[in-house]
Length: 87
Image (cartoon, rainbow, N blue to C red; front, top):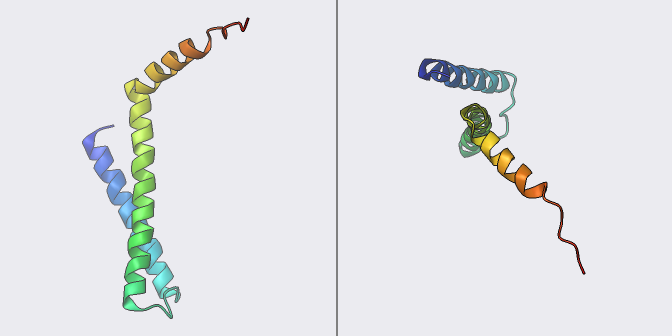
């Protein structure tokens, strides 16, 4: 994944998050909340979405780099040994 593609994905997720929050605001989703409550809701929503996207990106990058395969091979070798016999 190139840096330009990653930048486009981050901007796309940011735009989608902003669109969802604007639509919620237009339909009265923030009524009854104080300014601090609205700020907390917006920050929490944006933070959760960005955290989820970032963690999924790390999973895909790790998978493509070969680190996951090395860990899989190491655990497979470890657990394929027969258990020791108890005498």
